[in-house]
Image (cartoon, rainbow, N blue to C red; front, side):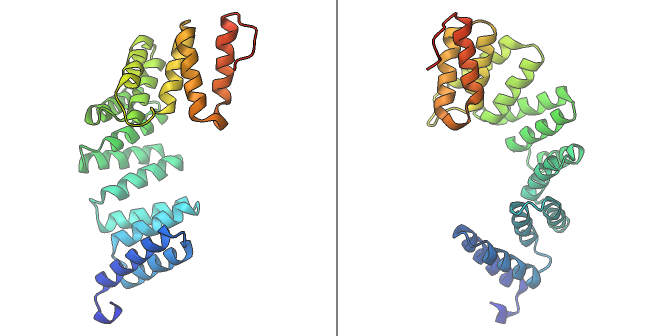
Length: 239
């Protein structure tokens, strides 16, 4: 390909080789091929995006953001680059910039439920609860089975004091037919709401379900299961 003198084809070939190396766990070769793609065609937005991914994996968030910004400058309608940029801006603590990035994704791809959920998270970080809730609700409207967005809506309703509404939403989500286990945070949140209103017999199996789903990271659920037993005046250990 290098002999053809076609920089676009050379860059594309190196990106394919980089992806193959990445799948086999050869990070060094993956980076070498992305670098070669950039050398062959510095204006290749996909190569800059690939470089950003490599920098992110090594924890170099600032460099990853810079590469994503270059990719977007080259291709302003690059939805995936805007989306990833928003995520990294949020991780870096730049919530205002993250909001702008996710709004841009929503403009470019109005059916992108993930963009609205991410937008809601960024707005919530800024304390803009009403806007955050609207974004989360829109994400659910776009994708009714989007568990992360459903959990976020429930959190917002719970925190606003709309406990019954949050509980009903969580119950409906757990009752929905599914091919895989529900999002664990939904199970835990419903268990907490039930325990707080004294529905201990309903809360207990949910805590046990959450513990079973992640035994090694269930300290909080074991603690709350113990509280359920204590609140029922059961002196034996929670087992």
